[in-house]
Length: 113
Length: 112
Image (cartoon, rainbow over all chains, first blue to last red; front, side, top):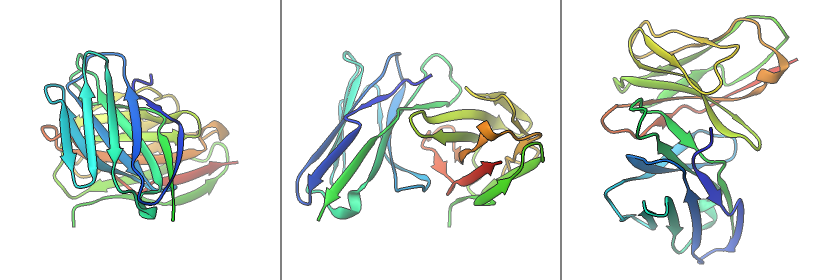
């Protein structure tokens, strides 16, 4: 089952601009995570936000979480060509308590130099 | 260096020929998991393990087996591969309490 759904599916911006990606989910969660994947490579963890947090920052990344709307957004500020990658949100299932993550299909970001 | 390793990274095989993809982590993580990634379908969990000798099915377990005899290793076994198992496979591990999952580099499998 696909819990996290990202929007948009693809995003193309110029270097220096900000990129915003959104994620929606269906069930209650303990936390939501964002991962980055460079083409054909393994996923790299970016940031984790817990259900009792509303906003979190890490370097040029800002993540928000709205549990009432079951949605999250990832903002990358002052984008660089090296930020070109696919970005996935992942949620745990609050009721399962198995540590299982459910991934969305991702947003493909292209940053043009 | 903390890492998850997978072998082989690339594999071409034929239908029905048993194969094993190995996964090893050096972070003493309790939780390990296998995913497959397919275009348009995202990442789907195949099997997971919460500790040694404890494994359970994920969303797409059919055609796969796993074992967890040691904490660091979690091999994925395809007893009789079929073309619909052609995919990109990822192993991941996490410290249960930290929840962040660390992914291996991926194994690209082609079944002819």
